[in-house]
Length: 123
Length: 106
Image 1: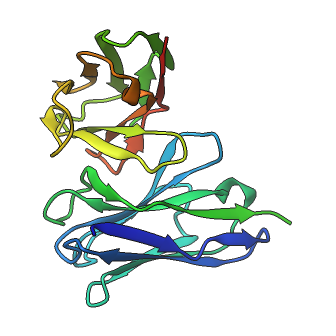
Image 2 (image 1 turned 90 degrees about the vertical axis):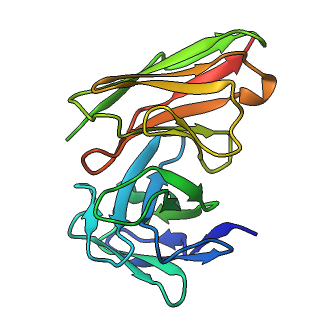
């Protein structure tokens, strides 16, 4: 079955850290860019970060730059998001999503999405 | 940053109606635009990429058009299953999503 499965979400205090993971199965992973998108409760979608297929190109939204780090392990078909210095504004469902194209330097449309993992930042 | 503005925010229509959602970019994005459908409690689903290319297995009643700064998503004959929120996304410079259009069935 084609799927992306996120894990690692939970409740964390302001200023804390959390590491999200995304495991891919049944899909081609290494030849595609990978991305994180989040959605605060009752709100719209917000792009968070992207990595090219070889990790040569990495991009972040201004809202998370300097606090979040995206990484991937093509041998393990896995994507991660290390989140530090968390604030209440980071509370959201976090989705990992695959880029539709060849995984080069450009961000692409996202053709496969995981089911999401909830991150709640609260004291 | 490139801002994406969708209109309307909410749309109510009957089964069988033709509906159109508009997405405007704050600067030219060529055809680097995608449309997604998100049903309540579910992950978004890709419908259209490169402004007008239909994703595999998406029904042909969905179509996209436009370039530069103005884009449209059209559903030619609305079905009950199309109840959802629709988002546009630019990926020309980093990435930005529109605020969403909620489609309700009358």
